[in-house]
Image (cartoon, rainbow, N blue to C red; front, top):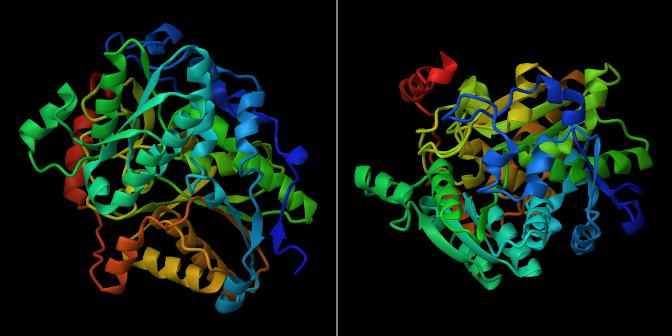
Length: 455
């Protein structure tokens, strides 16, 4: 079992992020300004983002150096281990070799600090005093709170109300790092007040929380907005996951056959697979990239590949993505980080080009997989991460039937220590599966089909 845990030294940690726009940038549909109908310019984004991140958003340079100040913070937990899941393999009686990249060892317990630290740094050096953001399950909010504390920035977080209620200890963690946290929708913004006037008991959504955070940033001169997923620069920062994984697999002589990750907005999965994608495009490998989402919010598997707003109210540019419609409000499932109506344009482009496959699962089967993993490998996964584990188990069982000795690698994107109330509901038989009704999806999609940009 010499390869039970594969570690890199600090000297082997990547010192640059890989930018996939260097390979696909000319083909990726650009963000469109909703007022002008033209591609968004750098100046259009300045009210909400610092120029350093805007330049990364549009850069086609292949490698973007990681600033030393960011590397110094990364070294608190990076490089992260790649672990062979021997006990899970044994339990499944599969000939497949299963590995997981353990991103839960970060201070915030997930992959999210990889971009939070970078974003806080670039804002700090440009004189920004406060960052606003949204968060679903709270993993992104806690990561940004951690990063803002490191660099001395104030942090305001709009947390989706149902997650604020389901996961109170995430809020506590954000408070420990000095952030202020509001259950969204709130009465603090025009966007929040508009939603509450129409639906006083709104459970909230990531789209609504984004609207509130963007409005807050745009109306305060010392404040910028920070997004934890979807945008190009976010996936760029997360490529440190895939770059480390690639190096670790090389060290033990493994070539992956399947790479798996959960998908809400696409940051952990995108960062995990992107360093492997150029070789697939060039025909040098035939890796199966499998994105996993909930049946309650099936943007990749049931959405349309169209331009849509990134938020609910319509403050953001149009993005070309698989979307369920910006007015889509998902049900109250526990995988709060997977309840976004769209996905990262880079990821959606790769799905559209059939480079990436997608699958959706209901939450009870996902929690079955999570408990199986906890019982065999010891680590308790977040409900989001458990979606990836469900797909890993299915792929491993296929290998059992076909007797194929495939190498399956997945991103263990976060731990479930703040999700124990969800596990309590699972053990008490109170979890409900939810497949979003076809007619409700069609109602949301009808609205985006009729947006002028899609006609």
